[in-house]
Amino acid sequence: MTSIPQVRSLVTAIPGPRSQEILKRKSEAVSAALGMAIPIIVERAGGGILVDVDGNSIIDMGSGIAVVSVGNSADRVVANVKAQVEAFTHTCFMVAPYLGYIEVCEALNRLTPGTHKKKSILLNSGAEALENAVKIARSYTKRQAIVVFEHGYHGRTNLTMSMTAKNMPYKDSFGPFAPEVYRMPMAYPYRWNGGAEKCAEEALDLVIHKMEKEIGAKNIAGIVIEPIQGEGGFIVPPKGFLPGLSKFASENGILFIADEVQTGFARTGQMFASEDEGIVPDLIATAKGIAGGLPLAGVTGRAEIMDAIHSGGLGGTYGGSPVACAAALGAIATIEEDNLCARTLEIGAIISEALNAMKAKYSIIGEVRGRGAMQAIEFIIPGSIEPNPGVLPAIVKFAQNEGVLILTAGTYGNVIRLLPPLVMPEHLLREALDVLDRAIASAI
Ligand SMILES: *Cc1c(COP(=O)(O)O)cnc(C)c1O
Image 1 (cartoon, rainbow, N blue to C red):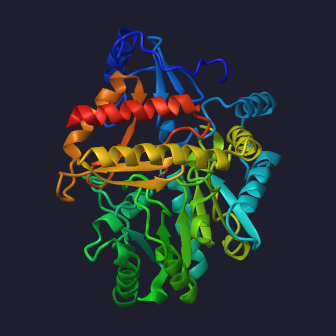
Image 2: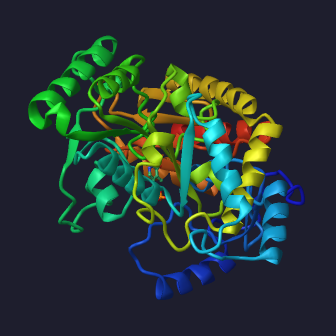
Image 3: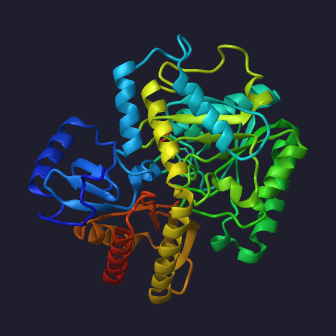
């Protein structure tokens, strides 16, 4: 990774001629159903930089959606993966086990919130982790109802698509959806009718009322929530909401299931975002940042819950691949040994100061929110809180033309979210924020 100069540099327009040529082949060969955030073809990547086939060096403010938190091809990840692919590539853990899988589970059990005895399983993707968390919760509680929230995102498989809130593009035309999934109002302070100050209390009362009256607490297997909502637009629930839900869950034999697929592994400045309010989830789903870019996911939970499932009830051919496990051990060592939680807080302070300065200047910015290296801007029509998705394409395009990759999000498509690698050099981060500032100025 150190071999890639950490400088933004454009030698062609975006996309350049080589990228354009290959993007034509993409249109011919790859389903049109896949989106694309930036029209380039990547050749190499490392630190805070993506290099395309035309030789452009672009600042990466997305980390492949919060995946390469330790940077692309991080040294320890590369070394571990090389050693593993030379030793063996696959046995299937349920056929012939290997140490790497066990060590990743040990790390998850140690790093996730709570000092109780924990156990884990490994899967391939975030959606698969959520699917398994639901299976475990239903089997353990002998109940069926799953509670999820407005603006939530949990994946694209049938069950997790059913749990996901937003119709377009995730669900439209893909039904029928899975039953026994109940969506609750989300504590979204910026858009709470009663005002941000009352949001935690009012939302909690409302959600508990609905769970009791509409579902019946004794029918609920699990409450699944992202401690900070990702695709929904980095919605941070107000203090007290998550602890209130967690308390209600434990008083009613319901499992509190944290979807930390996007928020986990130092992204918010703590190893897991649940720690911010001292939440100890019964089950926690992880993926994205876990393995430095290799596909891996996990479910970690109370040992008595994880062990209650019949033998052979969980698993999968590739889940916890030895190569992905080796990568995860490299990524986790990087986060711990390089103190990336502390670094994330520094990154977060720089981002937050810059975004709040933009908010003071531009009346199309309604709110700046998030934590650590997971922060967002919500755009509105000035003088209202009406969503303003219309300004996003020009802002994103301006940034791309200046060599900065930024991602969007939000139920209303009006949020720009920043998810830089946690190893982003400070000069690149400041440059990217400066480009974003100019991009917003140009869009007004
Ligand atoms: C990305 C994401 C998922 C789905 O993960 P995949 O690996 O894409 O299946 C689930 N939950 C959250 C919060 C996510 O951000």
